[in-house]
Image 1: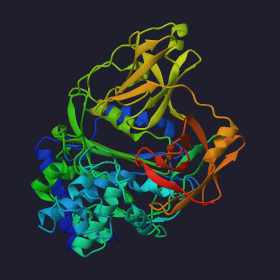
Image 2: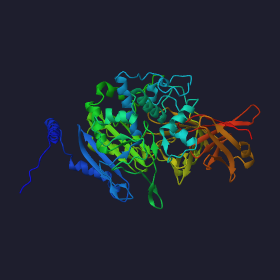
Image 3: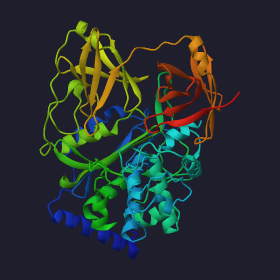
Image 4: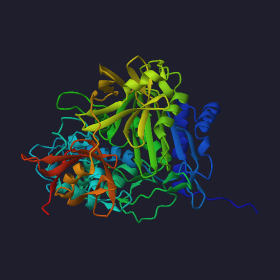
Length: 578
């Protein structure tokens, strides 16, 4: 006897809505299926991760409001051999920021706040820095606040510790100085977005996680998306993060975040397609809100920056795009949407060495080939994001490269850079393994290989066996000038005057500067030692990322030091009495 199926009325309505939606797209001539030849090209980009023996990625491609490609590659959980699918849930790190900015912008539209309000109106526990920091400054990374992650590391935390919202707020409340005056410059700052999440909660009277769920994710049909503030919460179908290991192949890259705003969005590639579609149909927020999201920030000088509200606004091969990258632990994410072409890509990975940005651009190259301005790749295959043609490589004899070697001090960023010759190749060394090969494009000009932007390094003012000046030019960033400096190699006797105990009130952290194996070392509260390599007199580089500048009084005695990293400048430590 044949069984007659019964369709509940609600399911029937849903089915009809879906059918009508598809018919409406079909009526406009939008293809509902992807071109197999293009799809196979995208498949080929991810073939090396198409195995359960490796972490991988989930990919979604949207065109004209329709998802035309959705696939998963690799393994979500290596321990259990669970494959990645387009429905796998990923931590997407800083891709989160645009949703935090969206919450603020929606509250602004509702008249609940103004983005030109002083943030201390909502977060009065922050110090009065003598200069007003507005919500707008937070949205555009122009606040001058020090970055929360680097403050935490400097205070002795490890990034695999459980880091709560309260931990971050405690560090921010202790700060008494800024990196720079608000609005003076653009410097990416996670602290601002943690504060924005706090403001959303305090203005709305709801937890940030709940407000975003009810006002953004649920209305957009992002059913597998939430801000993850409870690190113990079990999430079905989630991916875990991994990093490469020379001996074992892969190892876990542990993430225990219990904080939201700057990061901690859990979502899927499929759900992200719904978000990209909202830039087109503006169903949630409306046109005014979405337009404000994409309005670029402006510095006090009047200069425009390529960053809107929690989202990058830029150009690729002649086409305007919006989006953001993300990276925490072993998670890597990238969302890239081209409004004019109604085309977008979302790639989420659980492998630390994965480069979703490069792959997103390659997917755009495949689907938008006829619209993109074609250009010659730079040295090593680098493609400048600006779309401007790169200069062809120029040949220089290996022997003539010796004159470019040297150590250079960049005063503006308080950073040292080395130029070294390695096997007939000129290498630009930032610190440790953070380095790039330089390919000559003229007798004194080089381009960095394997970088997404056209980064040029020019040598000038030759003095005997070296050049006095290097000039580094990066797209959309200020020109950087470095001056040649004599290497500083202090004896152990010279190092002894730096030894002592130092304290920072802003971190509530104590460092012991000691001599270990004939070199200076920083001993922290965990009992761990970080080598400090001499750069010049009174200046040392610790751990490859923190610059320590010792301070002296009028008699020449050391009274303390300042620590500067990429996003924390001139943090003070005072020398404690014995």
